[in-house]
Image 1 (cartoon, one colour):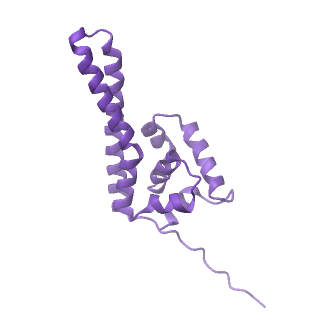
Image 2 (spheres, rainbow, N blue to C red; image 1 turned 180 degrees about the vertical axis):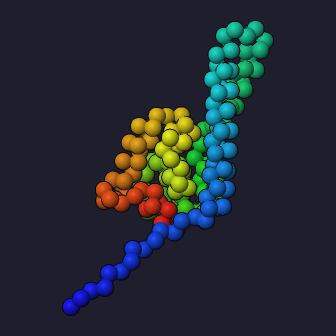
Image 3 (spheres, rainbow, N blue to C red; image 1 turned 30 degrees about the vertical axis):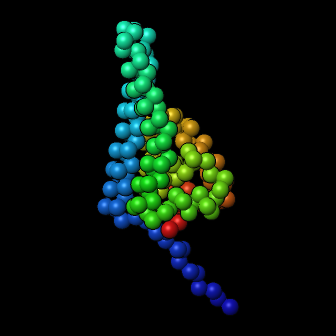
Length: 157
């Protein structure tokens, strides 16, 4: 008996305009986060050279920036992804509870799709670090060597 091959199932990809708006919103959030990190670092460097009456203000500002960064990290990415993609990261975390917060954030960017080089610059890490995260995520998703991580993430609705 002859079998008729079935065509491969195409993953659900975001429309180009939605991909672009998602990417733009996430890039904007990550840039703001990067700016805040630099402000906190600069405040820490300046603290020792400031007059005593201004050190307390610098410490307070540094603490406030640190609190914003701690509270906003994954929450911003989750909020943007959830609002644009109807709870995508929440469902991904439920389906794969071993994913770390960094891997969840990375999944959001990979789904857009975004190249490893851009992700590395946003996460302030090396491209090699992004590639190692991708490798660990592939294992957690039980993907075969020929299966694309980006396509897997894009196909999850």
